[in-house]
Amino acid sequence: MNEQEKITQISGEAANVSIAVVIPSYKVHQQILGVISKIGPECSQIYVVDDCCPEGSGKLVESSVTDERVHVIYHTENQGVGGAVITGYRAAISNGADIIVKVDGDGQMDPRLIPSFVEPILNGEADYTKGNRFYLLEEIRAMPKIRLWGNSVLSFMSKVSTGYWNLFDPTNGYTAIHAEVAKYLPYRKISKRYFFETDMLFRLNTSRAVVVDVPMHARYEDEESNLKISTVVTEFFYKHIRNIIKRIFYNYYLRDLSLASFELIFGFCLFVFGFCFGVYSWLESMALETTTSAGTVMLAALPILMGLQFILAFLGYDISRVPSQSIHKKLRGWSCVIEEDSK
Image (cartoon, one colour):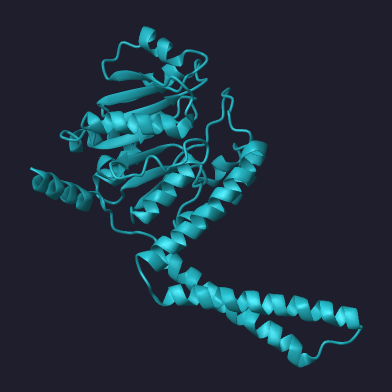
């Protein structure tokens, strides 16, 4: 099925479904109008969030676009891509949107792919969809080598910190979310800048939302990225470690207690004991200029090996627990009950 057929199908299925598009706008003066012009009729709302853009992107849209679906929202101070998206989410939810798609304004994301992102949510297969530029191997060659390497490293760290072991390309900002899921996101806690997409996945996992990758082309034209790798490496590393600890605590000790919870504790303790004892014994033998006995070596090696086995067993269980049942229908029923009780 080509994109035009998908648009027709989505338009029919979404007759009673409102699809909103959020476009963060910051230093995208040259590309923003082209992005808006490619958004199809299946979308009923378009929110351009001028994130205190020094180029006046919002004013350009207001003066150049006559599409009645377009609404421009202004930030008085720059809040980052996450802050702009959250503002767009809130506006779309307040205006009755059912599905919210986020598209960057720099031209890297083709708006004609919106039906592909909406379809899994409409079909009840997902609560949140995101782009993946690594599905088509021949397209990977178009990606700059530094981005290719960086995405590979970030993808692995993201798998561990978010719990979505089935996803790749975590920093991809082409996303769609069901409004019922977006309503319950802890917006005050979500990172507002470049870590936004990955932090969203972490928050979604703690809600047990289903996330699906959508294949897309990698497009690199004349846009200039505002992301400076040297300034975010430390921030990303710290936040990944923080989210790993939070996710494991939330999922395996606060909300549930299973065999895997004990495997992780025993594995970690055994590994640390074996490693520390081995280092201590090695340093002692160096200082005394003696040969370490076989028994001492085994006393260090066995806890390390057993600890690794426990940790690998925990990882296997964690990988098997990737959310597979969408939650937006349950949340819709829950919100209806809450509204009824509040009357």
